[in-house]
Length: 159
Ligand code: DLZ
Image (cartoon, rainbow, N blue to C red; front, side):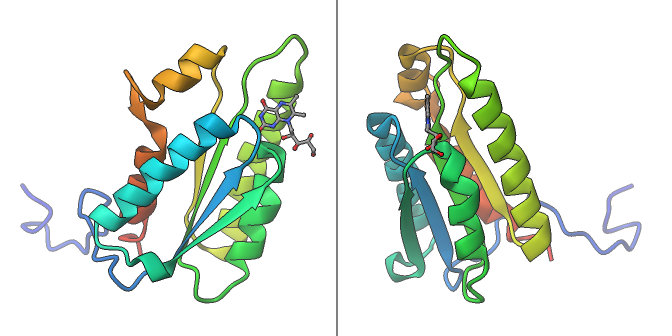
């Protein structure tokens, strides 16, 4: 029996909503900028492909991935912003900085999303090395910036 047969109201991320009048913010970390620029290009291109207007897309740069939460919060506070896409790349190093940063950002973005009732997308690569990052920023594993933007678009279908 389909959902229609059951007479359910369905909000589903399987549907692609009209985003032609939606406002997006893309927050981009400067660390590993060759990677995060590629993520940004992918995210921006995807938003435009799905109908977002260039004038409705705001870019915010922050120093590192740790600052993505604050950047996201500033954007979430703006009434006109509907969804926020956060892009970063934290490469595993000899210390545990990556664990601390990744966990803090994941928690921070979740908090902003729930507090402001807006989709805040975790587009942060957490690779073991530079090559894994390249592979996911337009390389053999695609561009995670595209995926982050597509996720933001889909989440706007949940009302
Ligand atoms: C400090 C630091 C280090 C070691 N590595 C990264 C990284 O791989 N990717 C990234 O986005 N940011 C890194 N940072 C910077 C932190 O995110 C943050 O900007 C600083 O700790 C200042 O709060």
